[in-house]
Amino acid sequence: MTVRTRIAPSPTGYMHIGTLRTVLFDYFLARQGGGQFILRVEDTDQARLVDGALESLLGTFQKLGIDYDEGPVLQADGSIAEKGDCGPYVQSARLSLYKKYADELLADGHAYICFCTKERLDEMRAAQTAAKQTPKYDRRCCALTVDDIASRRTNGETYVVRMKIPEGKVAFDDAIRGRIAFDLSDVDDQVIIKSDGFASYHLAVVVDDHLMRISHVLRGEEWISSTPKQIVLHEMFGWKMPVYAHVPLILNPDKTKLSKRKGDVSVESYLAKGYLPAAILNFIATLGFNPTADREVYTMDELVALFDLTKVNHGGAVMNIEKLDWMNQQYITKLDKDALLAAVTPFTTYDVTEPIMRRAVLVERGRVSRLTEFTERIAPYAEMPPYDASILIWKKSNATDCQMQLSNICNFVTTTSDETFTQIALLETAIKAYIESNGLQNGNVLWPLRVALSSAEKSASPYELLWALGKEESIARITAAITKFDA
RNA sequence: GGCUCCAUCGUCUAAUGGUUAGGACACGGGCUUUUCAAGCCUGUAACGGGGGUUCGACUCCCCCUGGAGUCACCA
Image (cartoon, protein in one colour):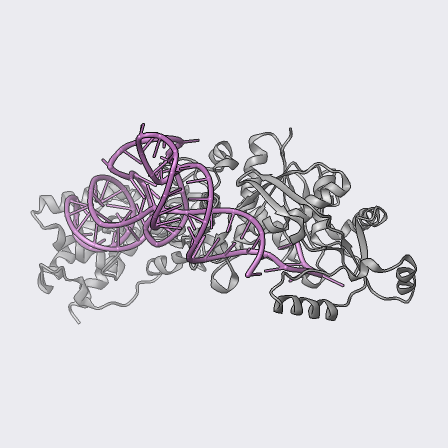
């Protein structure tokens, strides 16, 4: 069987972190078996439409580097096209299709027209809730005659179409959790066509999954309880059910479903905070799924090869941001130079193609866990911040010695070859040889040198600083430090 | 409240009847080191409770407890 998975987000303007994980699992499943991964957009709620939301969603797929085989595509000129032969892939363009299938259900007696107003429904639910009953539609409109319905429709009364849930039990085999059963007496007569003529989720998803030949439906755990409605719909149409797999929820620190109120829920916000796409992908893919027992970092190819639906955890997972930070740092460290510079560019106003700033980024990369931290870290390389002369003095030394050491090292740096300045290791060797041959103490020389170059008590090593700043700027900074003692 | 799902360190997780219950993040200590970071070594820390089944349960079954999700003309 060819695996055809799909993700079906509603276009809200951002990609939920939970959606991303489902995307990843869909992607892994499709890619490991030569299947297809399909993107479908569920925009049947007119009230929630957001301008430019689809473009933004597609843009996020591009930024993450996740490709799909069918669905809407954002083109270079900003317009949206589609690929695949099961289109359209946007539900608002499929209305006539849903209408047709709803009519079929109506004709077969599997659905009925309901004129009940929102007010009546609200009252009914309030009463049921007060009586500690599960809120459910009371089927009053089932009693309507054909003539009643015809006249009320011609009078312009608005109505919805509800599916008529039969009696009995229903069950399915979840690919992650195993068999899950429900009693249909607990299931409400779901609205399948809304009064504005749009299909509701339940009808649209069943029709689309069937028409698009979806073999595996991966979705969040919050959908488990609505699955019986979709099973019933499949039975009414006589269609084969896809395999369902409900992935566990991603949680707030308090273990409730991840929500905007309690933290960042969008992939875009993590991107904006300076997390690398690769780190986000790695981190989210291994939330609730553990490929091997002894490793944390995986490439997408490894994940595709190792992914196994039956190994997906059943319980929800709290996002451990500190671990994401750690993982991001791992990825920043491994980035090749050009990729690092390209990644940092959007996050800083400094020109990282300028030699000193470029080297500053390379030196500071090991001390940064998010891209947004670079600006602050490389600022001292662009302009020497003011500092107090007292911090130049090594704890085991004094001002007189400090000034002398700086003068001497300044002379040494002046006579150091340009060739030596091309590599951190060469600088380190040269400085250490200087200290050794003059019978000096590391601290007496290295501490003031480093502070003179960085202006800070905590910083990169003097060798890294010398390399990043270059000979000329280094000498200028050391000279400035020496004169501080004369003031 | 009904229905459904879930349950190993603080967090993410490994273990598929027999382990000193392993790893990662975070935290503590140490090494390295001029400082910071990184790296390396190392420490603290978990099977929710009760019954079964079994020679033997983290692993299988039941109950309890706890947590979560869901009960819309939102998806």
